[in-house]
Amino acid sequence: MPVMPTPLANQVLIALPALADTNFSRSVALICQHDDDGAMGIVVNRPSEYTLGEVFGQMGVEGGDEALRAQIVLAGGPVHPERGFVLHDGGARWDSTLAIADRLFLTTSRDILEAMAKGEGPDHAIVALGCAGWGSGQLEHEITENDWLTAPADAELLFQLPLDARWHAAAGRIGVDFAHLADYAGHA
Image (cartoon, rainbow, N blue to C red; front, side):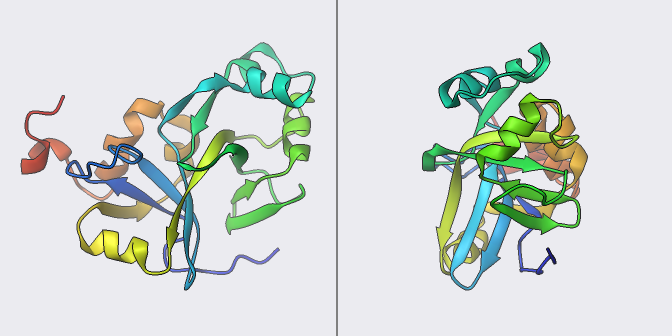
């Protein structure tokens, strides 16, 4: 599947400290798709109340080692919170897979969860419930209103850093230290 470049796909949005929307305060969201109709992304630093084992149980998926079943499922955004999204590096061999970049994919079909439970899934994957969505021109407007910074996505940020370190780390990748911003003063 060829990767079609879009303006902000494969970029992360980094919420500026002044962004008061409770859905996105201090969030990092990977933009998965962006075109004239709008944008869709997954918040990659906000834990949900569920583990992957609980999701497997609700879906009737058996298997998975203890570490996989204990993996925290992310709260991917306020849109479709009942729907699962798997962000991964393992190719487009599963149904319903969107190529975001050469080694970054988003899959919404059950088959990837079954493969993960059998130990046949991608090397790196995070599962999220829900996504974030912006209508035509909305995201661009929010960026011009200084709600978001943008930075290139990378595997370490998406798959390896602890969730609570991703907001500062994403900003640091473009040379921003939130401790030096006036709007951040007084926030721990």
